[in-house]
Length: 217
Image 1 (cartoon, rainbow, N blue to C red):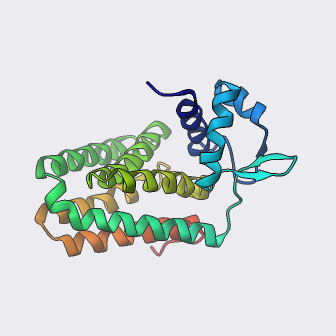
Image 2 (image 1 turned 45 degrees about the vertical axis):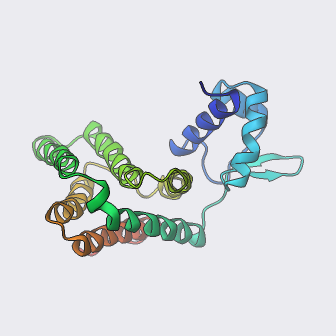
């Protein structure tokens, strides 16, 4: 059973993930209690962890601030993401079975077919969920709780950095799914180098958009 601290931590990170606490926002402990429905004691106990992870910054006599996003923040978050996900790709032959890869691939094919028939906001939201889940599953496949913990915190920072520019829409959902398919298909073939190149391209495209750039046609 989760402690009050763990419950408050989870609810606050949910707000960050959902973009309800945006970069630069200043909040008080009381406001976090109201936003999360957590106890004041739970919020107070969760704050030191959030500060240590760089998800909240204490401001003397002003409360807590969600970190502002700059170029260095984005590049650092993506650099760490790339290191961890590439390690997951290299380990994939030993950690991810072909049945699992086939299931992920089938899910992507189904979504591509649905988008081809009727692109809409609900489908785009589903693709966003699948996008996040696939990358988290890659990391989880390593079976290393420390790596999973570090990645999960960094994933919050990536989402904070990309809320405004990188939400999956019905227009870019096909690109995201096809980029996923490229490294999933390479993994199924046992082509680890090819999977790494495909993942690198996917992450590079994501970082480019997060920094406000555009992709080549």
